[in-house]
Amino acid sequence: MLVMDDLPFSHVEDLGFMRLMTEICPQYKLKQRNFYTSKICDEMYDSAFAKIKSIVNKNQLNCNFAFTTDVWSDTSAGVSLLSLTAHVVTEKFERVNFVLSAEPLHETHTGEYISMKFDEMLEKWDIPSSTVHCVLRDSGANMKKALFLSGLNNIDCTVHKIHLVVKQGLSSKEEIGNLIRKCRSIATHFHHSTMAQDELKKIQGRLQEPMLTIIHDSPTRWNSTLYMLERTQKLKEPLCLYAASNSKLVKLSNMEWILLSECIKALKPYDEITKELSRSSSSVSDVIPIIVSLKKILQTNMDYSPVAHAQSSSACLEPEESEGHNSDSLCKDEEETTNVINIMKITMRAELDRRFAGIESTDIL
Image 1 (cartoon, one colour):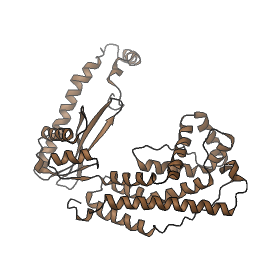
Image 2 (tube, helix red, strand yellow):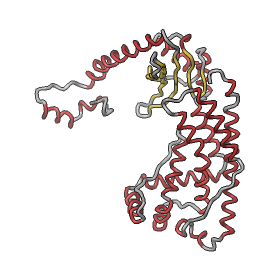
Image 3 (cartoon, one colour):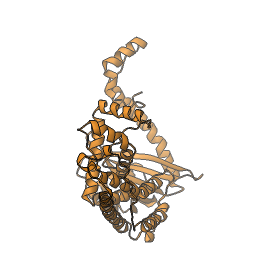
Image 4 (spheres, helix red, strand yellow):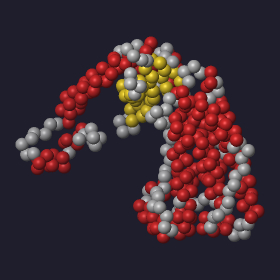
């Protein structure tokens, strides 16, 4: 139960749980948390370790190992962990993935320290470096140095590099940054108020639209920003009607609604590539054809001309814009949007060329 529900060990000492056990099984004497943190955990770990070790030993005879590794933080425990996941193909050509270790890092994450921890993990599982085909890692300088010091073939994570490419594009123009901050402010407004959520649902009901909620993005996943923009666009009319009667909600100008729509179009190809590379069946051999295809798609779209139609109601405009808003100002909005999107596209394409330079001559890929 503790494992399945991800409960703390202290749960066995909670008053509610103790009363429940007294009611359903009065003769059972409850164990203290130390019983589970030591004896039970050790037994479970030893059993799982033995099974995985047998898989490792068996596959060492038939193939080389590929690994993915990353450093991530467990905020609840206040510690950083170095993870090591093995990827092997069985004799029946079935993929097997299993996490070998998640070691806590107690020192500064230097290349030397990470290299030492990585070597310790391989030694723990009796995996010689000669059987390591390659290691997939992020493009951090400390991770590169660590695996260089360990003498292991290693390559950048393509998805992480695409994340950096898009992040650079999103920060290329102040107008895009302001738009994203406004969308986050809108998401925060509804996430912090159940009354606001209920009011938005009522508006959606009156418009006979699907009951959708606002999405808030995550700073570690660029595509979550795309999904936030998409959801904001889908909720455009309900949001405009809500904003008309609530002065606390941040309002988007007509130009920002156009910019939002064009940002979504520009980011779509990167999202499709990210999803393709994130599939469980993807392989490093997919990287070259996918990146080449992405570059060709982007090349055909470099001569950008937004087809933005201002179908906004007066409720979607800020008060000063709703007066005298004519076709000339709409054309100006579209022209400004064109310039902003062009700069974002050019920035991302340049970053793509720089970060993926020479991939066709990379042996592992």
